[in-house]
Amino acid sequence: MRAEKSKSDSNTLPFSEKDIRRVLSSSAGQQLLQLLSQSGGNELKRAAEELKKGNIDAAKEILAPVMNSPKASTLVDQINNSDGGN
Image: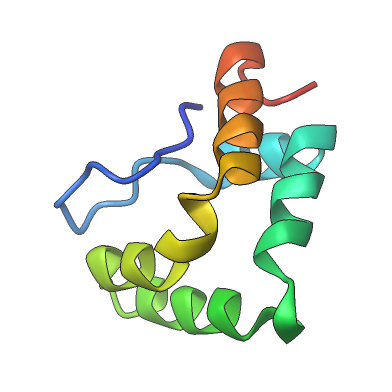
């Protein structure tokens, strides 16, 4: 799975449930989830709700402040370079 930093305008998710499970079971994926869950995870919950509605761009916008941070970029690179972050 290639974790997206923010490039798809389509309303089709660029990953499968299997991809999500693989990434979230990795160290880098767990760290990224922890980063996204800071401040009570409100942004993550809002983004998940938007994804359920098919609003991928809205979800990306909600998560952009965190995902554009140097730490998140490093974690995404680790996930992409190891195809799962393991």
